[in-house]
Amino acid sequence: MSNSYVQRPCADAKIYPLVSCPAAYSSTTSLGHTLHSAWPATYGAAYPLDHPASERQVARPLRIAHLGPCFIQGGAEQQAIDLAGALDPSRARIEKFLVTNQELISRAKVAQMPLPVEVADADVIRQAAQEYDIVLFWGLELDPLLSGIPRTARTVCIAHGVGDWVNGLLAGSRQSTDHVVAVSDRVRTSLGIPLPVTTIPNGIDARRIAASRSRCDVRQSLGFAPTDFVTGFVGRFSPEKHPELLIEAMSRLAAPHKLLLVGYGALEYDLMRLANGRIPGRYAFAFAEDYLGDYYHAMDCFCLPSRTEGFALVLLEAMLSGVPVVSTDVGGARELIRHLQTGVIVEADPDHVAAALHDVAARPHWARGMAAEAAEQADLVGHASLMARRYEELFVRLCGNNAPHEPVGSTAPTYGSHAPPAPPVAKTEPAEGCKYAGS
Image 1 (cartoon, rainbow, N blue to C red):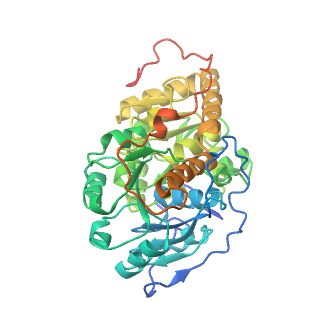
Image 2: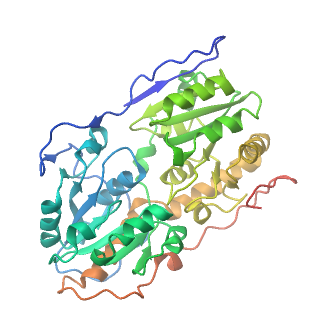
Image 3: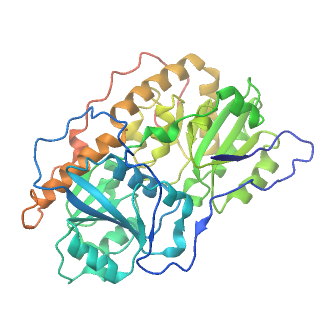
């Protein structure tokens, strides 16, 4: 179901509330209580394996518990959903999701889960470390929970970002962590903790970007004219995502440039006030739980304005949707985007962003060629099935074909150095004078 708030051109540019926003689950659920979804058992079965799995066999499927601090509308949670659905159940399977903060569980996100979500305290987590082959975790310090506690599970930390926060969590998990997965090479090189690291880029379940309506219908419902050039954003309205940068950039451009902001978060009303003041009559807000393709297809360009990222799933979603992408130089952006060939890399500055958006709008043939090459690139490397095969290989290697555990060395190869080759470079060229921060 999709719901949208539309700000149409009007004289006084009033603010109206969103029709709806995701409701967080915050009842008096007891520890160990399980939330179930009705997601079909065939989740993830739609993808053929373009990249065959290793011939290394397992005596039985590896059992995995996934552990995190929350389960809300976020990239880490979506990556977990897509991974659970795409793993080959004959080799490895996530059997449950453990969440340490019951106040940070979204019913909408739980409804997308193919498996149960369970609120967990230290005892539940320690029991999981005894029962499962792998504890896959992110976003919390593991040492206070498992350090010095006998366990049979291998523990694998997913590093979803860069900076002091991630390194601090790893420092607080060092004694209890067997391996780290970095979601991009930039994340891997930013880690300052001496633990074995493997780079496994995120992938997506492309059914999330399915469309239920035509581009014309969606744009009309949002108040956009056929001749408008619509730049879009999808994500949380939060400081690290920096959506206000797009409003400031849009204020430097004249009509028909307009802005579509799809998401939710603490900054939404601040963003509405800013948009009303800076670009009245030239923006729309929307919230979507599914059929994101409705909104991607309504865009003429997608922009990621983030201050920091690990690996932005929305870049893959936009690229697979055939939308030209503009991105700040964060996380794995440069690992996905070849500057001016499959996208545009810009500085986190409204003038730089505005210049890039202007050029994408003014050079439609270049923009279409760039988007086509980006779609090919994303189709090659961006599906959840490929991500899942790489996690399976790591899990099997760590568990040694289900043999008794042995210490994991620090020289494990990184998938970042063995990624599939990029597709041929597009033969589309930007016009002279098209220069940005990444040039």
